[in-house]
Image (cartoon, rainbow, N blue to C red; front, side):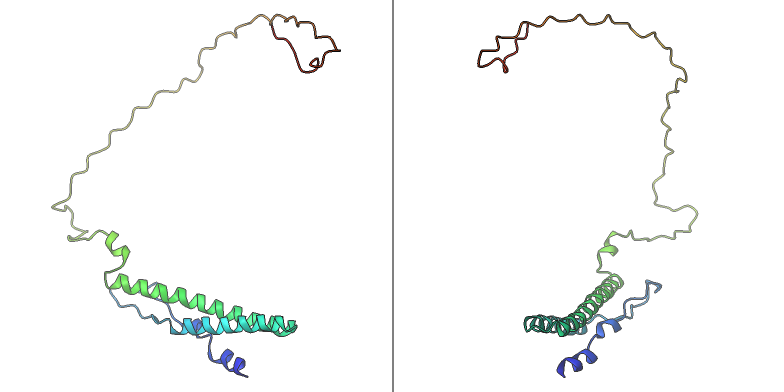
Length: 172
């Protein structure tokens, strides 16, 4: 009975909201930053997993399968809720100027639409690299004719009655 009550009460990590991706960067994010529901779903999922192992040990495969499915659902809910809360915390860090992305962004202190900015360095045009012309038909030389190699004379094989007759081959 306790398992049914826990199954209906939790699973709340699926209800957590993340930051709005279309939110302007000047407005405060409205999302969930607490991981209490994530922890509750993780604990309940772990309890159902232990119950599944216990049912499997007492030769009740149907009960083990049912509790394993419920455990997977709770653990998946906890994993999804953890990701949502982490994204929300990153959005708050960016909003407050403490995030890693804010340090990498250049700060604009002048009007980007000003026709001639006062303190910008002058960019010089890049000199093009000269390209070598490609020769379409390179001059061909006739192939060099080499004489065929001379046949080499092999020395006589050792007498077949010796122990090393199969091993030794004399090279001139």
